[in-house]
Length: 124
Image (cartoon, rainbow, N blue to C red):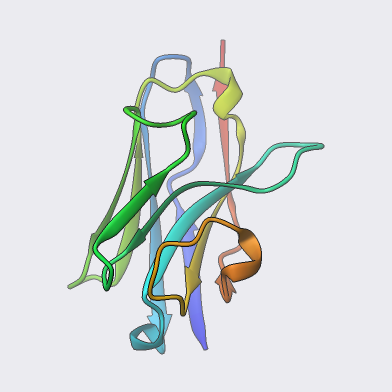
């Protein structure tokens, strides 16, 4: 089992920045891809960024390219999502997820472990 705990969400004005963190524990050696998803009310959960350190590849949704950056601190077993130039459309609950897939995957069904989510609210 892998446990994921997100932090760093909050309320920010449009144009501002936030950094989300996801601390991983447990059998972290069994997962090779990690990603950030978000879900707004009434909408499906979507992958905004994902990274596979085995394949060395990264995915970003078109809506966040150039604004969001996914990164990982191996020593701390922590995944980050730096979010810049936020706008109200970025308002959602953000989830950290981990997958045993060795290639980057972007569909929620391919992820095996999930955090509890952290709320991000961007005011206009």
